[in-house]
View 1: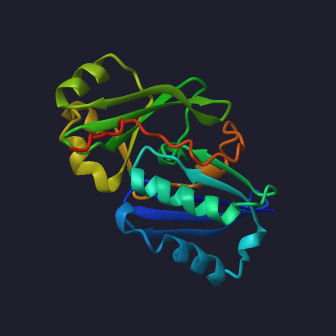
View 2: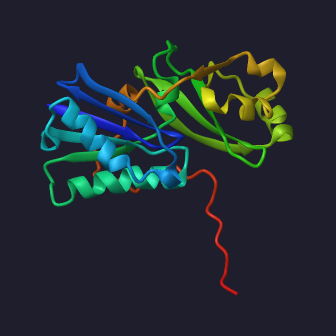
Length: 222
């Protein structure tokens, strides 16, 4: 069986394909911002063609649901929704992209770890996960913090790990207190095997379940 994961939550697209839950056949990354990601579909199809993998052989799709770029998240979800429309035999689901930041490190049962994201506007976005039964689960806690809020927040919390994407290092360290910055592990890229291995996430064929921590801003027409 072939299964795939696709993420466009940040400034690059990541696409992986695995066979029989063991053999990673594609692990591709391409710089691609959400608003200019018109090449996403062709890039995925070209990656499959390069590895002689027919699209129709992929029976399961896990989509990175964020936190991240609203536009990028929706593009990836809409693309796979179109690919799988009218094909009930193909399973799909959304899996938090945050899982892919902390994936690969070793934790003890019940440990909580935090994924940090640049929230723009001199803020960071916090997404908290718990290590449970050999995988991450979101513990329900999120936050949007400015520099002052971050000092109070992290004094009251005890995390087993801090993770962020390397391209956001400068922005994040403007907010996080210097005592904590040395604890942050920066990833050069998301590891989408975390999405493939997320047994806690059901195959609900609902690709609208995206992580929107910052509420949408609506303006009334004048």
